[in-house]
Amino acid sequence: MSTLSPSFATLTKLKLVLSGFLLLPSLIALVGILLAFITVAIDRAFVSQVPAEQLGLLGLGVSGARSVLSTISGAMMTVLSLVYSLTLVVFTLAAGNIGPRLLTSFSQNRVSQVTIGMLGATFLYALFVLYMLVEHDEPRISTIVAIFLAAASFFCLVYFVHDVSQQIMVDNAIGRTQRAFRREIDRILLEEPAESEEEDRRIPRGEGTSIVADAEGYITGVDIERLLQIATENDCFIEMKVSPGDFVFPRTRISVQYGAEDKLAQKVRSCLLLADARAPEGDLRFHVYLSVEIALRALSAGVNDAYTAISAIDHLCASLSIMMQRGVPSSLACDNEGTPRVWCCLINLEDTVSEALHILRRAANTNFQVQLHLVKTIGKMLETTPSYYQKHLHEHLLAIASSAKNEIKIPLDRREMAEQLNLARGKSLYRS
Image 1 (spheres, rainbow, N blue to C red):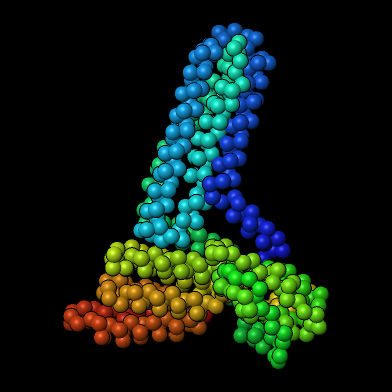
Image 2: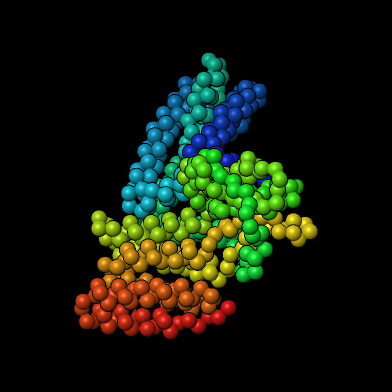
């Protein structure tokens, strides 16, 4: 069974700290301060004792060095403010035109983080070198390092502007979200389906002890290893009633325990990681709904961008097809002796695919171009999808046909839709 490590909660919280514009830029900026102390110490200990001509260095003198360092520190602070302003503008455009949940990927962008950190490091370096200068110091190495840092900051800024211009393009944003989606698919779903129809028969039947939540929030992680340990130590079976991405509130049933005399409520609750918002790690439905949201926003009356919706549908359906080819991992976890101990369904694949296609089908109901493309895309999915899932895709084709019969009035459009529907129905070529 695909599981999460016992330190999952700690790792998740650490990843949240590492993302954003706080930790990494701050660490890079602190390196700038440390570098200032090192270069000033080198200047005082070695370089200042030797004439600049012998070292091949330009002797600026104290006043010249102060002028260079002051110029660099002032320029870096101005550019740093510009970078932050530009980043906020990108956030605003992304939230309004693409989707607010994409802001997570923007804030985790390493180029932005490194650029902010580099500008901050150069500013603090120049500032601290200025602070440590005394009347007779000639900071030759310190000044040269400051110039190189300023040059490096310039190239970071150029690349930052290039990266921002690429990020804000909607097609690139869609591709970026799908790459993150595929990484989660590769991490969570196996190459071959691991779940069998007999597994649910191994769940104990009868009355068990219900365990309810004592807090509210989205489930961003389930520590299967810890649950397995708890069930083994207490010689019981724990059936989880929630999955990553579900929202729970106090008194919501989260699991049922069978066979244990002791109440394990608090221990089971500690295996769930709750947050105010859904997280992309471990939650495949988050990525599905993110792509659906982009398509819905493109099909809204205020935007009405059919081609963006088509692009989102193409990428999403490709990912859904891969998910159906892989199948879901086993929901059953057993101890070392093969005794069933934990049941936790990480994702209901049929419901997830059906819900995504239902939403897209309804949104495309009034847009013939998108509706026609959705039929073509479902036909492509039928070519690669195992027969077990094909019945769900055929249901969507029937629903589109029923809707088109009532909505499409132009004979030419009706004929084109009928042709595509017939072509799609005939593509059930793959058999598992």
